[in-house]
Length: 282
Ligand SMILES: Nc1ncnc2c1ncn2[C@@H]1O[C@H](COP(=O)(O)OP(=O)(O)O)[C@@H](O)[C@H]1O
Ligand SMILES: Cc1ncc(COP(=O)(O)O)c(C=O)c1O
Ligand SMILES: [Mg+2]
Image (tube, rainbow, N blue to C red):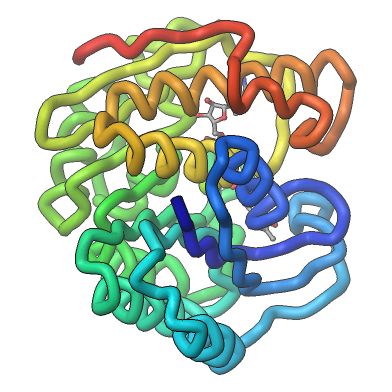
């Protein structure tokens, strides 16, 4: 299986492609990474060096891949942190090129905008671009709760609110939605919920909440969910596998007291999670 992954890249640590590429490779996927930025480290540190690339660079790399005559072998495209709206347009034209070569290819958009603790952390114009262009073009979207609320204008307090927001997003285009870090009134204080929905129904996975705050977990879980969904076409199974792997990864990260997720040291969790959390129909 071949997946084109268009995301940010950091030299030190694990967010964007530096979080998503290796887990997919560990699951046997041949990943074609294109970087939207090259930073020293993730922006959660408050300062970083490096630069944001431009749409033209993405177009050029896509042109070169097309010249290899391999786009028909691309099974899916995943995008994450975009850097600028110009890069966003180049990503959507890459998706169009892949779909033209392989009509069965799916596009998974992780609409990276922000989170509850930090608010919006992307450049102006990106939230609008996600809402108006990227999400409608996607087959699968993987927002956290903050992003789901922003994309749908639905405030999520209860599980019923979450259902409404997910259905609103599915009405906008994507047939499959995974929501991460979902905390509703029904979520116990020591737990964290995830939800996934497709045409067959909706499921929840609940794991313990760990005393860690990390970046890059969202990028890894989107990549794992997409890989498992492409293989099994089951949102329930993909949710359970991806959430179990990320729980194991973060448990090991907490035990090590690391600020960066243990993408390499805890790699077995991507293949055989030490604890499996079953999906529950909701
Ligand atoms: N403190 C935590 N305890 C347990 N699981 C966590 C924790 N933080 C993140 N996760 C897991 O990682 C997933 C993705 O993280 P999240 O923070 O939602 O992504 P993003 O970085 O995109 O906002 C969550 O749905 C959850 O399964
Ligand atoms: C460069 C970059 N890419 C991606 C992300 C997204 O990380 P997360 O998976 O925590 O949403 C961040 C967050 O800080 C980032 O700085
Ligand atoms: Mg995210």
